[in-house]
Image (tube, rainbow, N blue to C red; front, side, top):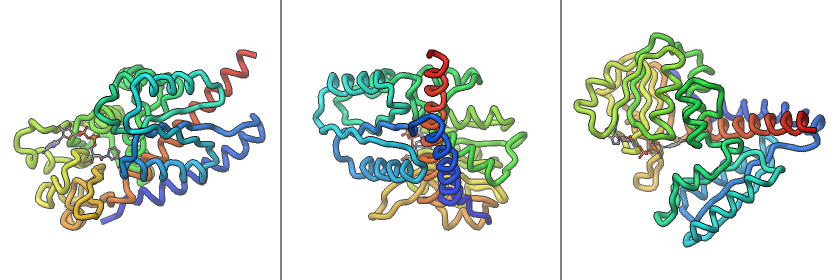
Length: 287
Ligand code: NAD
């Protein structure tokens, strides 16, 4: 079994990005800038935001945390997003999810300018993705594709089974895999006999948020297993796949943590860099 070491691949890519950004700072006079909006004090969200900030520092991306109180009004978050949309020094923006229940998540995501949408969640960017047009890709699916490509895993012609159909992971990763030639099956809560599907997967992507949903007997021998899940069980982080059982059956598997998580952050940085370059070019052309 080969471990798909997302931590190693992401660290190397973040450092490579640093080299490119250092040169661009010389050339264009400023670094890319990512604004991070955090509402409340959800411990998992705070730790994700910390990780994103640290990675920005490695890659030479300026980052600013906009921390709002748990009971912030919808109108206040809207105002902050508008301000950041209008601020020419900001290239990318993310709204750390999940948000407190009283906030309208979809409305707030839609308010983020599609040109500053570092997470790739905006409805126009997702629409472009589904029409196979150039766009910013959602960070986790983009990170998964980068990881598969880093290990030269053949995608064209493979049967990829995705467990989960969320707008931020399952559905877009299915699209990206299909675009690279995979035949896809998307499973979800209503899927009957999940095992019969997962057992036929050359590439199995699990993003259900259900700890150890996929057991060893659900994994096809010699397959590639991508475990997106991050669940805290008895104070320990575990994925959606029973790693100990699956690692003896799969040919490639991601660990949790240090698999998909760091790749998601790397994709976020690469998206911010892409947005920065398009802003720099637009500013140059409009002069
Ligand atoms: P979600 O709750 O929005 O979607 C879960 C999906 O799983 C749904 O489509 C649902 O139909 C499906 N599902 C749930 N139970 C199932 C079952 N028993 N059988 C088949 N399908 C089932 O979750 P999400 O936002 O897509 O996240 C999924 C997991 O990935 C979570 O653990 C989340 O924390 C993690 N995540 C990790 C990263 C990362 O960077 N590592 C990024 C995003 C999400």
